[in-house]
Image (cartoon, rainbow, N blue to C red; front, side, top):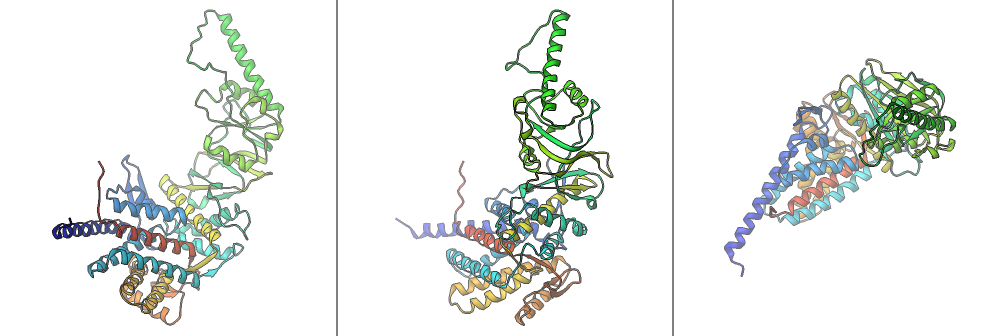
Length: 527
């Protein structure tokens, strides 16, 4: 039998849990709020092992936080979901979720049921996506300038913003190089782009290589060649060393004659393997790492050097599929399979000394049977710079991928959010009851994004948002915040644009997360 006091207690508990969840999630959103936009601040994070990380990428910052509250963890996962779906807008989605939760607090205080708020928010989200789709401008992948504009907008908020002129074309060209068909493709696999990081020089030394780059120089301890023209490349997955027994056995040799015979047999065995490689026509050999026994020894390197074969050792197992796609070769798992049809071809393979450092890389250029892969050689003065440049370049490539998925652009600088908020407020006035209140609150929450952009740029946010409302009401749909000149300007004229998918995904994911938090009325800890 339900007793009035118990029912009241249950309601109070549900209210307390909901409030606790909202406060915890808003605390996470406030952490990254100052990182939003081109003038957003960076975060310096110290890892438990003493490593230091500098970034203003929302997903990176939140992934490093040690979050304990279950509801706060949902916002961390939210930023990761946005990172997977669109690659950009990871800070935006968390700030938007925080603003929506703030709106929920005031709606709950008015006595509106959580389920009614969740239902109205989902309705507002669908309406917002429809508005964004209507105001978006279609774009073709052949229109390189539009792609560059959207990538430059993405990079403007990164630590490497001063290198945008170099990194934006690299990001666009690297993704377009692996798109199957620019007209019909609806997705692209960024795993076909390899980022090779080398300390030394500056970010300006970064280059796009139409071929393959391996971050370790050739092995020439035995005096082998370091340059090879008209290369025929073999990728070996077996060991060029003396065989071992399956079990850990010891062989005790009692006299020198027996020892000499063992060494002769070993020499003969390895020489035979090297002759098989030479007979196949290969003049460049890549040897995969081995954990069972030595992948190679000094004797095998000596024989290969005498045969004039360039040797690259310690190829990682994870890199093998990419190397095969790029060079058009087939991994060779046994000496009997070492045939000409398994080899890849390239016009030139050779060591290249990196400027500003003492390291070497191996470049494969003029690949005759090139697969749909590209390589970016990323340079930087230290590991911190290279790590952030790598994350920034990946985000830029994700922006191009978003345009491959959905070929449409919208204005940046908070213009799209203000336009959606204005139209949603008009839509809310056509409704009655609780839905009108909730959709009005949703529209006001969207204005937090341009408000935060203006705040982070050192402008007067209330004046800026008021001016934006005025211009959008008068029909200037591209009016947004010009953070460089600290004024309101037409974003389309400034070429500040972003993919439609980034904004629609952010609104959809943030709304779903907020609705999920609203529907929770109890916290059960399972021991």
